[in-house]
Amino acid sequence: MEQDWIESYKKSKNGVVMDYYNKKIMAPMVRVGTYPMRLLAYNYGCDIAYSEELIDLKLMKSTRHVNEKLKTIDFIAKDKTLCYRTSEKDVNNVLQLGTASSITALEAAKVVCNDVCAIDINMGCPKFFSVQGGMGSALLSKPDTIKDILTTLKRNLTIPITCKIRLLSTDQETIDLLRIIESTGVSAIGVHCRMIPERPRDPAHWDRLENILNNASFSVPIIANGDIFENSDIEKIRKQTRVDSIMIARGAVKNVSIFSKPSPVDLKQIIQEYLEIAYQTNNSPVNTKYVINSMLNENNITTNKEAKAMASARDYDTITKIWDTNDKYKQFLLDNNIDINNIEDGANKTKTKNKNNTSGKKTKLEETNNENDIKKQKIEEENNNSNNNNINNNNIINKEE
Ligand SMILES: Cc1cc2nc3c(=O)[nH]c(=O)nc-3n(C[C@H](O)[C@H](O)[C@H](O)COP(=O)(O)O)c2cc1C
Image 1 (cartoon, rainbow, N blue to C red):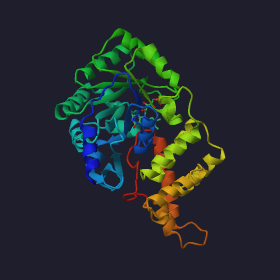
Image 2: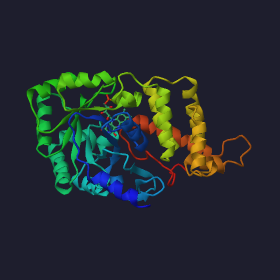
Image 3: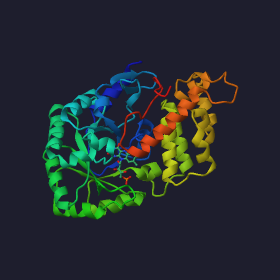
Image 4: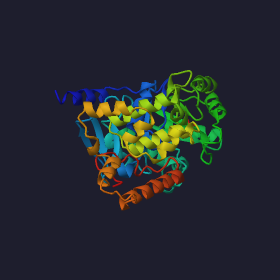
């Protein structure tokens, strides 16, 4: 029956009891933590996968859409871009919200609360985009707003609420903040073991978390985040800090097998697996390319032939050729009766529209697309992890066009 999957989907979301003890968690990551990456992470033993940060003002205006074709639930923003996608396979999905106010946080959370297993509030992002709007790490100096947001969500929703903070300047201040958050009844607290001014290249302070947990005990599970790059680091940080769970960001981008494999799985195999999930779930090629490039960057692979070819890749046909999975991709299209010239993603539409351009010159559309790409990359670099405005322009209606 066509609707069977919906019933099974509903059960999968309603019946989940979130447990934050002894868990391996994929951290929220803008543009990386989209649906295919979460599915891949579960395949490699990740227990809980956070979404990229979604800004409340955008999410609250999005609409829920049942995608019969993909058997997914999609949240479509006002500008018709895909805000968030999930499914039964997205087993322990946590949606992270960027917010500065309990009112808009609740409004946004209500839109998705039946389709996510928990909601997390970003209290760690130090970037201008977040902080100037009173979001992210700006919240860390506003305990009253923190309390207001978390208690409002707790009071009005039945799903678990969590938050992710950074270390404050002293351990005592951090303990005091953790106590305030604990008192709101949240289900877990993620601690990124860096302070607000610190950048990813600065080492994470596991020793400070160790000291905090030696000097205070909390009734709420604490999740340690920062500089877990090898599978063996998981046990190391657990032992050193006696933390309840661990959360990995860049280590998972570098090699998602970190969640379960003592030695990393071959990166090409990881990329092939990611790619297969990405095209099967109709992920935007723009986002897919971004994630693969992030994997390459985390491995410092920037100049080999694949990395070079990725620079100009715009569609799945090209990307799958680069990664030697084009036969599989073509078979997938064939099996599913999909006409390659009719795929409604930005890249292929662009190609189709340019079919008649034999001059070799770039059309206005191509130029605009290139400029958009460069602009987007610049914004991404400036905001590094914080700006979530465009993200996942999926095939529903492509913003790039
Ligand atoms: C590509 C990328 C995107 C990120 N986006 C977010 C985000 O949306 N929300 C958030 O709280 N942190 C975000 N972060 C920070 C990570 O969640 C994490 O706290 C940080 O990278 C430290 O963990 P790591 O040392 O394992 O990378 C992002 C990090 C990266 C690398």
